[in-house]
Image (cartoon, rainbow, N blue to C red; front, side, top):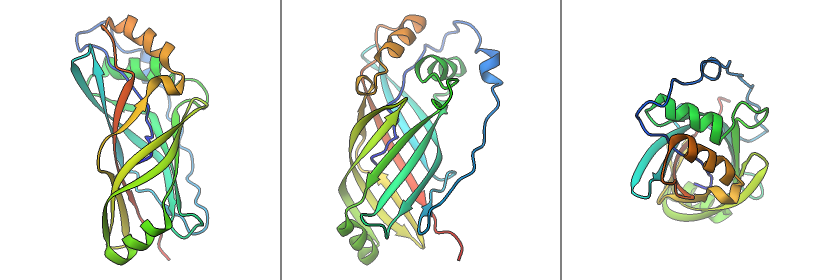
Length: 221
């Protein structure tokens, strides 16, 4: 979703699995700041455990690198005018299955140790007709959404096609096809070059493909 988006996520890059040194101990031990979640009236909170972004990064022109990012916060306001959602993606949770790659992406590409740079923010609006259809039909397919993704102060527009539906009182949204996010649109090209040099890649594609799966759960009355 537009995120996505996200988030998005925007996002990332990889190092070869062969070891170029151990992960930075100080970065690995960096304490995680837990920020309280704040909901506005009428918002459905994002289920953080059930929601996730999946990324596909192409390195050396031929090798896809899958990775995930966890959600940090989010909420959906179905009855707002217009209906809208906000998402916060935790960039410090980048996970590709290789520890040294994860540390380098977090520290060199995302620079998550910088104050306020550990998250990406996504916002998007839902067409009122989409909300009406989901409520009436319980499930809809391939609906186009538009939103924005903000990383390190740079904002880019997102175009996402989603499936959506209700599972009991929960509302879920899933991307029907990957969202394409350009690293260059977020001003992270220099970070990508530094990461490529350290990881000794032939290159990493500017376009990152992002899939999103979100679940919003009503609060108890």
